[in-house]
Image (cartoon, rainbow, N blue to C red; front, side, top):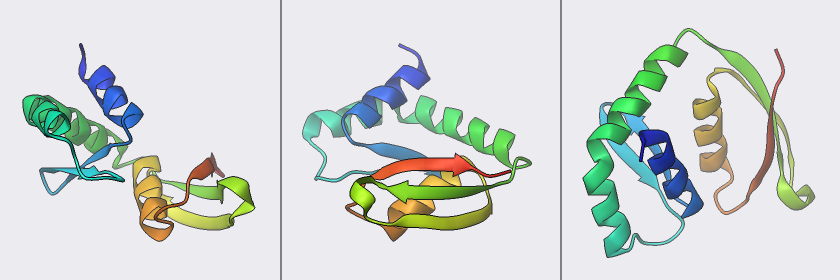
Amino acid sequence: MNVVQVIEQLADAGLRVRADDGLLKVRHPKPLTDIQLQYLKLHKTEILEYLLHLEAANQSKRYTYRFTLKNNAGGGTYITDCTLDEAENELIDMFIGRELESIVLLN
């Protein structure tokens, strides 16, 4: 299994992973199970290396995004000068508990 498949499996389980100052950060709606924690420990190095590589590749790619939330719960706010990952993380922080319907690239 490659690292993209690992990240996809984590996402399917509701976990979002990101690199933050060289550390692997995990967002999860519920406490992690022992199996999830073991899985993250097993794949931590490869996940972190992949995310850091993506982060480095995206540093020079800055865009503007617009988002909407599901069930007409709001949206339309613009987040400027950030990568897609940064936009997603910012929106998740802003709207904890609400699901994003879309993030649209504007430029």
